Length: 198
Image 1: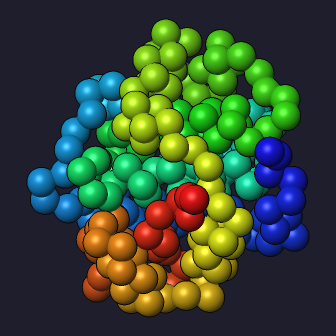
Image 2: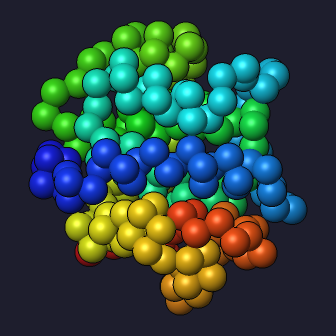
């Protein structure tokens, strides 16, 4: 499967809101969140989340759809038994790892990890380790249905409010990071309940 068929006309605008959502998410961490050592930085990176996403998009040469899929993967980690907290110390590493996983699963062609490691500003050994850990965390469940993908696009395009998405996310009994943002009025951040997997 490639990402070419996933609502390509929406991509140039939608994916840029991912940074806005994640910026808000890391500014409001929720209590009891799990810390995964593999994704922890020693100090907060100087590059902003939005700048880092733009760097990945430019140099990883991935489709915009892959960035949305990476965003879906990250949200899945914040839910249920995973309960991974998003912080300024781990969001950059989660971004590069989830994007690499999305590229490899969705794109027909991709570079090796040594290239993506340079894009992300980390060592290849670190990326390999993070990729293995990431795949275990999501139990290798990487397929994203068109329905779920399109729902995320609606959120990113501001067609659904935080509260509406929060209610929908609750319907599957699994809370995601959107629950920590329930008081926010920002209209373009949230997520659906699952990957839409069969």
